[in-house]
Length: 443
Image (tube, rainbow, N blue to C red; front, side, top):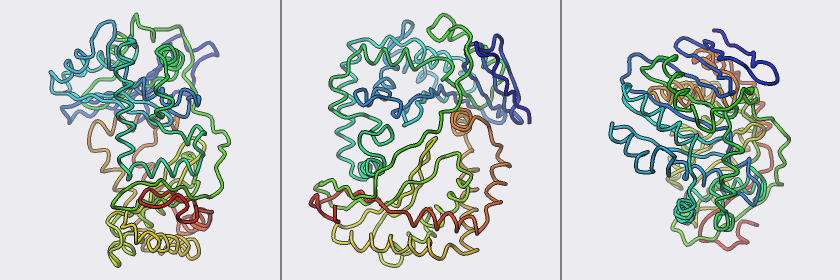
């Protein structure tokens, strides 16, 4: 496997640089700093393409909270070449699908089509991302849509509780603690000028990665992308590709309890603590530990709380990781009258694993779950396309499947237990959404 690490002089590369990352995987850096990665899968008849921008909600100021998500909506509303109807109809006319999503650290616009229709998908997506008009009338229309989306989210307590937990860990005003969607208070006054300025300032070639996977040819995809971007605002002077997002110190809150009073039939609980960043060497051990604790029906929490006692329909653990921070948490949904008992059981299980660790059998099962979920998750062109983008944007390198599986296999019992003793003994924050008084649970 070879990889070109030379990004050119400070003024940026003056030529196209192409390298091979793995069998079937190639990477090209355009003079503008925009990167194109593809994976050829000749056995498929489909192709997926994504335009990934390294900007998300954590890059916003408090006053512009939600602007990345707002912009995600607007970029499908029309360009100099296409109306909003054209953008959707062009893809749907060939049986394809297109969509977008925003996270705290990046935004993605993607499409999946038949392999023969990849040129169309490249042109439509590149046009939308590079040359959107951001029409004032569309801003007002989408403002209403987003405010409805925020209201709808507030009506989903099982989703809301995770946002409340994130707020408990990082703080409501911190970049990682704010809602990706923004709030009514930030979306309502946001102007077209502010959104357009953010668009022009943040959507630049060095921060954009185009990835495609399926029955394709790399050189052809590169030509298609360059043709689609010619004459657009992304057809810029030479510049170096953007480096990885820097890992800065992230302040977390002291352990606390936040309760959101809602007239719900269930109590929604998330108990957890600050975790580790995505580049931490212990991330493979964390994947194993997470599966042992609450990653499936054989996990400790599922067995103890649902199977043995029938106290909750849904109970699981999860880890969220960013460039410089992370969270580890356990979710449970149960009858309000059972909330205290469920929390006691969760705390007891976490304390037990922190004190005595996991068993050899659990280690083997946890490894198998990590490996299986990873490999089975790469069965379609869309997941392959996403893997390329996340590897480039978040890690700066592409780890091969065999290499990743080897890292998981290398995790030892001592490593998992050392991580458990550290992570699970940390002070825990609690988020609750349900029919409780604000002072419930000692909040």
